[in-house]
Length: 152
Length: 375
Image 1 (cartoon, each protein chain N blue to C red):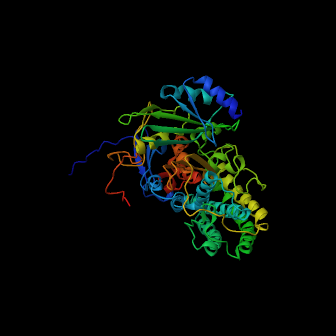
Image 2: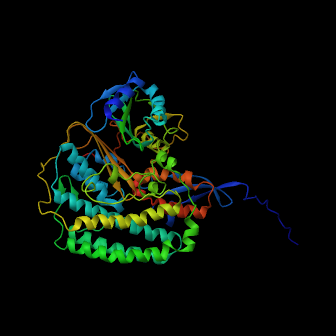
Image 3: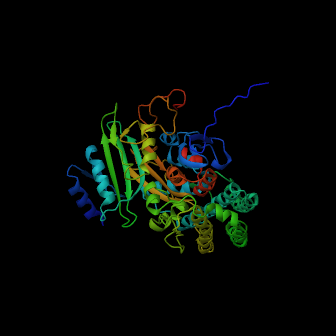
């Protein structure tokens, strides 16, 4: 499926989605509550068949926290980027997609560890790299660690 | 007479118990801890504990310029250091819309493939050793030394090279480079036959790997298991084929696919890949065009505002770099999609209901490098 049809189809599936101009991949911002349904559709519908989640990243944009899903279909070879944003910095929470793509299990734990975004219904929501008693989430822009990070 | 105390004997055949494999265990090839639940010697499930070598490289990247970041990517998967460097260079070149000279593309592709062979040689020798064949270890290291010598002659280092820079190379290759690479190919074509003779055809090795650690194609895609491990399950995931970069669109090579999905299939993919890599090098080595070893670059590299993604095929799978730039000389956010991290997530699934001894073989066939997992 080429990018124009893909864009129309995704926008018709999720009316609240916002399209972002991006040179490399077509990108959508999806409302938090609609992400899980859309993800399941994109994976299971044969015309999309986005079965390969090749990257899941979290970004702290200060005004909001963002989760970026890079998707590819191994049959049609088309690619797509989905973004979910949450303005809540105290208790950010997003639905997990690890029941759809199993690779999301570890990636979501990483995002939780480093950015403090919780994933609802995740089977094992623990820190993955840092100690269990670590304070704070290092990839947040307001994270301060006077001992381990030397400001130059 | 002393009274005999009868201690209650638990039936370990029925009861589950846990053992720690690692963080210091030879077969984990680094500091990875696996908490294995066992019933008798059957693995019921396992939980990997990562982070023993977590250095916060993504956080460090936010404080460093792009040419400096190259040096950090060496330290992810140190066995495919060149290929990681390549990803960052390609990303910066794509963002700045710089077309690098042909010569650089040729040299980068050749060195990437040499790096892939060296990595697979080290995998082969340690895999053999994990299964009890110590001779393999000496054979593999002996031949890898030839590649490291070529590397050392051209750019002075053997493991962490940082040879690529955005826009080109740090310096030109040594005048002997072409001759030595050709000599190596001639040498290794003979020696790789020994690899097959000593290990591939070995009945003990085959018994320990065939039908062990099955991973279906659907699971490989779902878990994001890429590289030789994914291709052993029939998952066509070679970035060099599907999203070609540098010279890969101009050379002929096969994407090796095996459909069994067991440990032996993953082994065979790597054995064939070494031959394919030699094929790629042979097509390029005689035709390296003359020219500059670097494109004209500004002194300070600032990526335009936006986000960029670059995928390359590292020795263990798909390596991705995701950058969010705010127009400064340092990235706003840099994320590495490391192949080993995703490959490790499938370990629990594929080692269940197998013997604990098979876990060593399965782990060897996934070929994980721990600094790449922990980052």
